[in-house]
Length: 442
Image (cartoon, rainbow, N blue to C red; front, side, top):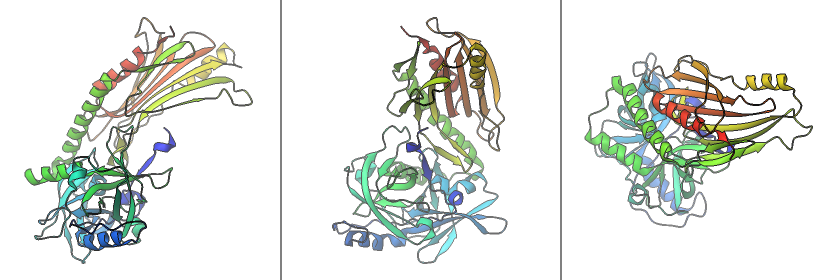
């Protein structure tokens, strides 16, 4: 995976940094915003403070704070939006944790979890009250009509340093991402999870969610329309039973991956030649693809390696120790330069190992290996397949596959496939498609 795509979710309990969001939506004065403390930023901040919520997760046994996140009111009767990952401890273990809020005026109380959208990383909670100050969603943002380059204001409490307003620009949807995010060129930092990003009219354009770790001022927002849709769902439906949270997460993730793999099956692959082999890469609109070689390395390596890799960076947070959504294909052409046939065979055997282990949330891997010839136009392959089941979410698996050609004593093709949070049938179908496209070069 390219470091350029590694992101950080602002989960306070993971980063030990609290987050407070702010917001309220009234019509503003459209003043110019050249710097962080221009009249526009000052006015936005002054007008939205009363809609702030600090969302705290407490250990139920002793009422000690376990994590802190952000939220903002979106209705006068106490509905509020936050990130799913901010409330995930409580959602997954409601008997062990409690949810509390703290407002800017010092008032506090319990929160009720009403609805979640795991793929969008959103949740709707409710506090008791009426006539509460609240934000409204920007209709242009809800209809994906914000102008690229438009000035936006992100509000939160980075690193527990106090309320902060940050100016930046809207740069449209993040390209090559199946999970939809907006690119915000502002300094969103840990502690701002769940905070609102606002237009000059103090209406919600998006919800703070993550940042790029390997760059500067590259941050990401959940689009406002996902939050607006979840609020409507929470208003019209019954409050979610805490006993059914795991079943809801399971249902959402199964639906999400079914849609993803159906669209993957419809993609037209692009063919790439590696040595005497031809492979198909998933150069769809959501993939980032990279190539590398060691041909220019000195001293000359014992084995020439030419690699082509395409990956979808769908990091969906389920729990602090469970992210899902990744799909990655990788091909490596290996050609011996300084190894005899026996040495080269031993070198290839090491590449057939799959690094996978069980965990608190995943079963130990169940692995199978076999020789297969899936295409008349392709070589016979030695295939190792390992799957780990999600212990709490039936029907979801993390899968690793490694395949190696068997012909020749001097060169070989290695194919690797990684999938996170896939249905078993979808994982099998994706693996078969990959293997069928390994062919001899015309």
